[in-house]
Every structure is written in structure tokens, then in C-alpha cells.
Image (spheres, one colour):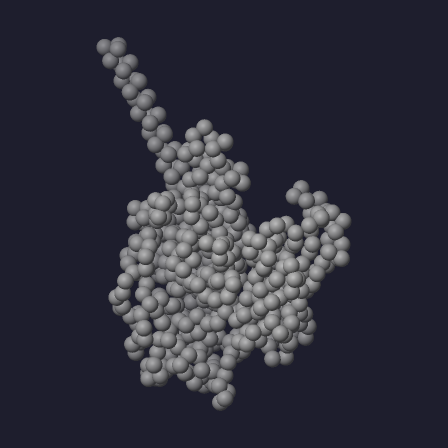
Length: 539
């Protein structure tokens, strides 16, 4: 269709197209055909990618311009997860999302349920690699999670859990000639009437024979002690959703507890598909400090407490990249509790958390309604200042539950040709926003956000370990602010989020309001001086 909505043409692609993207050079549209099975699991089409040649335009395009790209056994590396034993790999692999490098040479597809990435050679029109992303070891260091929704507390700590990354949304960018892939590690399972891999850990407790060799954070003695002290109870990891489609030993036992999703965002090297960075437990720790015992790990259709701890936590759903004032920033949307995390990613190996903001309103009511504002971000689009109708960077966030689109001003850049004063923001007026009860936004200690990568931990009582080591460079820059004053200064530390160039992502909505308020005050003061002067003249 045209941007005016006029029909131009159509073509046939693979089964159940779930996402599409253009190559940067404009030659192709790449379509991720997820190929999910029918609910009775009797029909399971093959997952694939369709390449649509649009180099000569789209009007009158036909199916001859479509090349189906299927998965061949030879490119699937050992360790790639196969969910169903009754399916072939071609049927089991389910492309969820696609990103393309700047040169339009390689595309990268997220195979979410399979916990893998597929690399597609665009000129050759074939997959060249399908690689497992491995497991996130929640037993060690800053890899922590709250594993239970039945413990009546916020308990973000190390557990003997190996969780699949299983990304949904992705993005790509280049640093010093190297392409990197960002992933929002949501997690997902095959769960149908005819077949479901989902189970609770407590339901499989007789099927476990935990092996310390699979964990960095425990000795076998410590693992055995945890089990003796109720590890499989619902207050610990018993409520955690796990999978029956996991590796077993020769006795038919699971040697680790496996989970869905990494509750984080990650950066991967596009050449090797190896992990470069993961945000650890940042998302849960930050939202814990913002929402506390009112709405920590809330669901997206209810305003509640701790309901998602057993099931993928905040669920990072989508990620996009924006270039703001000389820096690369990642914006990650959290599907469940809502809101957007912002990281400076100029150094792919050491990203720095910048802030978290949300325009969701927790008003104390149980069910989510229109009064709760923007709920459940599903997709993000960054519009750079030189393409923006306002002359400022804009982040658009589409929200699945509320059915709304939020537009956030990001940074202070303005196109010079559209403003007499290039440093003056374009929009002076701000939309009215409902501010929740300030008691719902507890003040917190930012030191709780500091992380460390300790070695084997003594976790007999399974409490968070106090470990001292050098803090990561840039950790002092952490803060939490809201562009619409919904989450208000929960971790504010006097605008610390400065980059090496001295810039930061300002609270633009608040800044504009402040400028407007200062202008009004100036007018009032000016009128007062004029009146005073006239009275003096009369006297």
C-alpha cells in the first residue's frame, strides 16, 4: 500500500508471517514466517524467511519476485533447541524477528522458541548458520531473579536456574567497523492444546538430579543443601515455569532447572554470534526500587504485586537504537510492568544504564483501564531529529493492552532551519498527565543497583550475597526519571547521566514545563515592575 492507503500489489509468502523489514539499500523486504503449529498440533508448517525483491518498485509486483529461504539441516549447529520430538527441525524452527546489517549483506533472525539466531547471506539467498544462544546462568554474580509469586516479598537473588535468552525484538548497529545485534530477551514456550512444554518446577521435582558442573555459582554440596532446605517449594523456585523439552542425563533426569527468557537485553557479536554483554538483573532491580511492594513485577492487564516473578518477570519485548547528541542509546520496552529502559551503548562491552521512564499510571485499581495510561509496550520506533516534524528526536512506543501510541521527546536536538534559536525546544506546551499518589513511588538507595561478578557463592540460606569489588565504569551515572512525570525522581541524583562529552538525556517534558513556568514568572515580575514604576511616577 502507499502511505495514503492506496492498494498497490500483493504477494504470497510463507506460513504465518510475523514481522518484516526492508534491507537498508531498499532492494528487499525480508519476512519472518513463524510457521506456528495449529492448536491441536496436527498441522505444523515449516518456518522460513521470504525475500521480496522490490528494487524495481512495488507496483504490479508478482510472486516471481519472492524467494523462499528454508532451513537446511547442514547449517543447524549442535545444541540448537528442538522443542517437539515429533517435528522436523524445519517445522520446529520459528523465525520471530529480523534485523539487517548496514551493508545489506547479512540478516539475522531470532528463532525465539528455539533460543537461537539464524544468519542469512542476502546476496546468496540462503541461511549460512543457525546457532544456539545457550543459557543464562542465574546462579552467579549479577545474574539474579525473583523466581516466585508466592513468597509475598521481593527476593531478587541467585538461584540454580539456567534460562534461555529467547529474544523477541532485535536491533543492530555498528561500532568501529563491527556490527552488533541487540536482543530483548522476552522468553516464550510452545503451549498448545495438542502439545505443551510448560510445567512448574515443583511438578517435576522428582525428575531432577542437579549437577553442579552446569552452574558457576554452586558446588554440589551447596546444591544438595538447597534441595534439603526446600528449593522446590513454591516460596523458592517451585512456582517457576520450566520446560519438559530440556536436556536429560542417561538416567532420564534433568541436571538443571531451565527457565524461559533472560529478563534482560543482550548484545551479540554479529560475526561470531557470541555474547558481548548482558544487563544481568538490572530490569528487576530498577523496577523494584521504582514500584516497591505496590506494583513490582506487575502484570500488564492488572495492577498487582509480584504476579510475574514465576513467569519471565518484566518481559523485555522490544528494542530500538537512537543516536542522540553524539551517543548511541538502546531503548528497551518492558511488556508486563511497562515502561522503557535506556542505556548508553557506545561501548558494546560496557553499556551504561541511563534511566527508566514510564507513562503507565498505577492508580490502586485492580484492573487496567484507560485511566492507567500507556500499558504494555509492544513496538518502538526512533525518529531522529533531522527526520522529525518537530525538529527533535522522538521515540514512538506502541502499547498492546491500552491500544495507545506514546511519543516521547528524546534529547534537546532541534533542526536549525526550523528555529531561530537552535538551542530552543520547538514545543512549549505539554499534554496534561495524571500523576499518581506520590506514596506509590518510594524513594530508594541507588547503591542497591550496583552489581558485582563474584565467584562461587555460599548460598545456604539463599540470601543475596554481600560482595565487594571494583564498580563497573559508569555505574555512578544511574538514575530513574520519567518524561511525563509518572515515575518521579525515584532514583534522581541531580542529572548524573552524562556521557563522556558531558551530554545527557534530559527529562524534556519537565524541561519544557520548567521553561514555560519560568517564562510566566518573568512576565509576572515584569508586569510588577511596570506597575511599581508607574506608581512611583504618579507619586
